[in-house]
Length: 534
Image 1 (cartoon, helix red, strand yellow):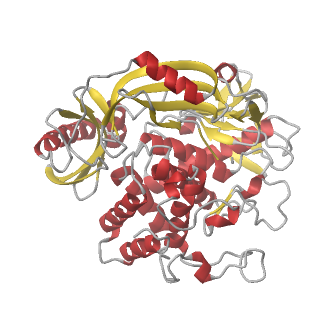
Image 2 (cartoon, rainbow, N blue to C red):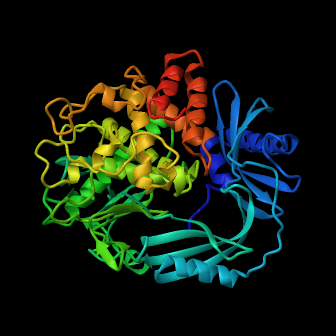
């Protein structure tokens, strides 16, 4: 696994954002202006006189409004949770989006060493460590107040976390682990692809002497590799083989041909790429026009020394897909591909930390966009819905069994329908329920999906879909809902955004797109209130 990249380089980000050479220089100039504004607005940015800011992304609206995402440092040390988006218009400051709570900064004199921090992280990791590396001192600002800490990266197979690429933050005074999250982010889980789950589909491949490679030149050279059923260690992934073929027909619609699920993966990746490009104007996960690798036939460590094929994952730089088992088909459904690639989009934009409420929002974002990709694909053999992963169940005669249910998250037995002060303590796959629930209500309203109403085992009613009795909440339609959510993610959310801040971010996005007196703005407010985020 590759180390986590905090953000797109400014050169790459601005090249993509601007397109032509002149536009690129305009964006570089905007980034420079934003840095100047950051110095002029210390109170708005909760900035100390020794804070510095570096731009990582620029978005310019048609009306000239500029949104510059910036990483913060204090006396040369990265401030984790200090990222900010500066909003301006024609160079005049408007406001800033951030979660940093104050301007206080800690002493920069550590009482422990980097080696001690690595020992603390390694002990907490509890497993087979492939690599452990101190990334140096940082200011950890995701808690009540900023503290001096060491960042440690640990990669390997953890009994607690399974396959892991962990970011650790260890207090430089006490030596205690302050926070950690896994960058390996999972769910439960012009040729012809004879796929397993959606029949025969068109895919783009690379023509070479003697045949074809499963590389898509039209989508940044994204590629599909065969991990050959091995455990997903770094060494095994490096030794995975690129899928090749002589006749440009991939698979046989059955698991007996290893290329079958590669066809599913190539199809899902292509639909996700096209969704982001055509709906949101985003050119690939990192908005740099480059595709990423996907690995088929992977076994993923889930802790306790156990490996399973019952999972799929984004590992920080690539997608991995397991082969399933007696309960599940290979985890190569379209919404799964959309889910995993969207983890990458989150990484490249808001960087929502994978713990607490921000972790729940990270997972919700992947479910939301995975679902929107499914609607975008609109494949008759995988009818779009708000169920996550329903196609991977080998036995699902009514089509109502799923990993997660966006319209009523608690149907999975663990996810939260409504926000409470304890939501942040849940596993991120379960705290995501609040965000999933919000988005369903925002897009569709309190409408009971077919198969879940009176007489079904769920026995849902409109009243059961809301937390506050307001069955008129939301209902603004998918098109507006997805555009509001994407703008909130890329323009207003930052790494430590929680549900209350997500409400603010989506309201700002709705105001930008539709105005504060619009039905869309009112729909955002009512949908959040309907999941108890007020």
